[in-house]
Image 1 (tube, each protein chain N blue to C red):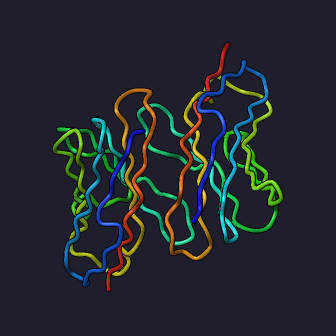
Image 2: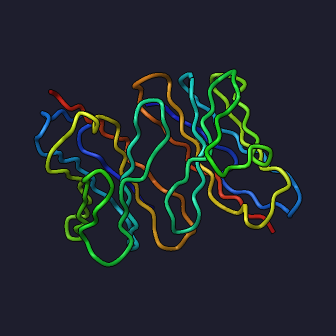
Length: 115
Length: 114
């Protein structure tokens, strides 16, 4: 079955630094990837929708200059948390689809802790 | 470790008929349970969630789900399907530690026939 690999699964960084999270579709081409954020004990919040070769569409309230999304190829999307702060500590989860009406496949998530 | 099984990758119902989407979970700790819906070309939306308390949870768009610990189930129902309910539905499990991400089922596609 289709696999989405997310890396790293766990990262600790210091406040003020930037962290890059990768989301790869291993055996299919992902035309669209979604990035979510999950606060502890809460449900997912959609951050942005990323289409290959075009700018990501951010949800209201998500700072696009802070959460940089790049979807440069059909198998890779990256989320960079710039100038991270402790309040950015969260789980970040990506999902990918191959096209219209195709199943959604999830990565295993990245736990970011900012100290 | 936690896991989710959604029985039936595709469910088809007639407009006005009962919708029943099945979800069984496995968890070694008290679970938090969620149902999400994904409309075509969109991200996930939360339908409802169970954390603690009342086992029958009501969500948006007339959906509800009942947490049954003895059956390790959290099935999603709606009394009367609308055409607009056609979408992909995902069940997910987490725990109350705040230390683990959501674990998703593979999804169930709901088709509604006029």
